[in-house]
Amino acid sequence: MSDIVIKLLLSCGTLFMVFNIAGFMTWVERKQSALMQDRIGANRATIFGFKALGLFHAIADFLKMLSKEEFIPQGANKFLFNLAPYVSFVFAIVAFAAIPIGNQWIVGNRVIELQAANLNIALIFIFAMMSMGIYGVVLAGFASNNNYAFLGGMRGAAQMIAYEITMGASIIGVVMVFNTIDLQMLVRAQGAYMFGGWCPQWGIFLQPLAFILFLTAATAETKRTPFDLPEGESEIIGYFVEYSGMKFGMFFLSDLIETVLVSALMTTLFLGGWQVPYLHPDGFYFPWGAHSALSNGPVALLGVLAFFIKISFFIWFLMAVRWTFPRFRYDQLMNLGWKILLPASLINIAITAVIIILLK
Image (cartoon, rainbow, N blue to C red; front, top):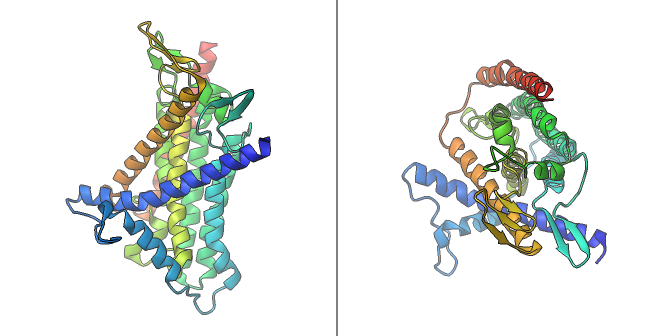
């Protein structure tokens, strides 16, 4: 099997994973919010009388959006109006190509990196793709010929610029510590141990302030409560207010995909990615001296499983935040981004630099 075929299979597998997680999140959001609010949640859609805990609602939503009429408002720029949802959707998907979902998988004499695009500038690539997604928000607001949509688009642009700068600045400390922007190498660097081999050298332990800053900025990047100012439904403001049918569905799915993406980034940068504590390429080595031998296949599988468990934790956390906190006022949103988070991220860079110099 050629390298091109392997990369194609990895890409298709990654897309399959992302789409299914994002679709499953529509059910998770309903059920988790219902649990937090002492409700039953989605339980009406059935297939042959089976409710399956409301899982069929995701299918019903998909069919509904496919069958709804797609409306284009009078005076709208039709080309840009139709292009905008694809811009947001495609760039959110492409960013996953550089996320390592596992370690090497050895099949015979072939070593397969469990990463669709093994880039040595993976971190820059992901941030470039994420920054391109703002064009979909701006185009949707501009092309709709609607003042409310335009206001939502401008809010989205200002918010994403403010918080992407903080996101970029907050990870500089992580890059300084591990000395790489290759995400696969960065995850492997987190496989070392400290404090006598008891504590893994994960980013969250070495850069706790950066983790908090990145988590806050990443939540804002997803444009979900309490940072959902670009789509404030109670204010009838939203960059996609004129969209219907599947084009609205693409914007909605883009937000969910971005939630999965930032969860994968936080896992990769701060929770060791696919690393499992005390798991080495040939098995488990525990600090108290015990050893359990494993072949490459189970080790790689455990790494992939650990990666998805960590992603699931962050998705649960972001959902809990989404249904717990009220929306910020817009001036509060901007003040938090520019006056608190950005200065704190710059301070973190300075502190990290001083510590690295002192340790050397």
